[in-house]
Amino acid sequence: MSISKLRLMILTALVAAICVIGSFIKVPGILTTAALDSAPAFISVAFLPPLFSGIAGALGHLATALTSGFPSGPFHILIAFEMLIVTAVFNILHKKGYKILKWIFLILGNGVLAAIPFYFLISPAFFIAAVPSLLIATIINALITAIVLPIMGKVFSEGKVSNL
Image (cartoon, rainbow, N blue to C red):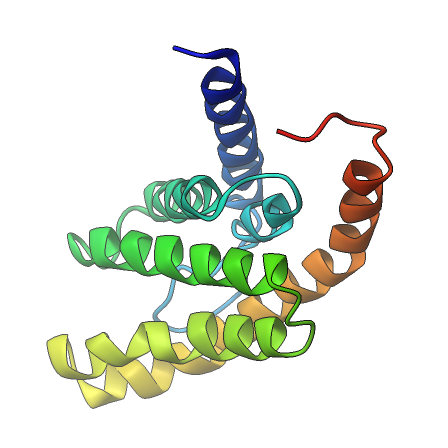
């Protein structure tokens, strides 16, 4: 295994560990397990490739599900996959320089689109009850990311930390 791959794996594990810490900070909601677990994964777009930041986001959701008692059962695997996709696409949009589009995608993708399968899998009532707390948690995670991401980007672009 090369040093750069090992470095990526270690950074991904560290980001996932910070996501686990965020999973203990829950956003009150009726039917969801919304928490501040995704902000570290969103921030990691400054220094991780899309797949690795997505993996950290997926692990962050699984940690939230675990600390909440897996209220949605096996559906949490689907939610973790959705987090992987949302975080990876956010990473791609960030790296391509889409300053506004990445935030619109992040809020709508994580706060609304990710809940759409549950409209059909569980019920329309579940979807309607879940979306408000998902949106609130997504906006809080996005605000944290919006504050920290420029700082992380500056640190990595100025060479204070070697890029991977």
